[in-house]
Image (cartoon, rainbow, N blue to C red; front, side, top):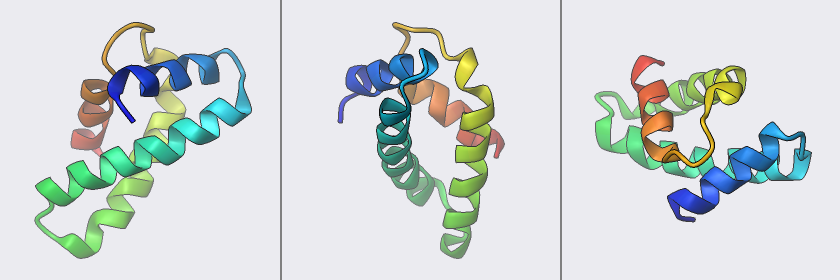
Length: 81
């Protein structure tokens, strides 16, 4: 899925669409897993960091600004998880 489509899912999720939010989380998890695998110092910690990151994404989903790229927003969250 491309960044624009991922952003559209997140915007729909912000509007209360539960199916869009579920699809966003599935796609975001795949994007984040690849990012974390690339950055991982400890491959066995990837799933833990991924879950922490997704929880933070859930809490911060309201802060995403529609029309902005989602990837950098997700990566910034992952860097702090």
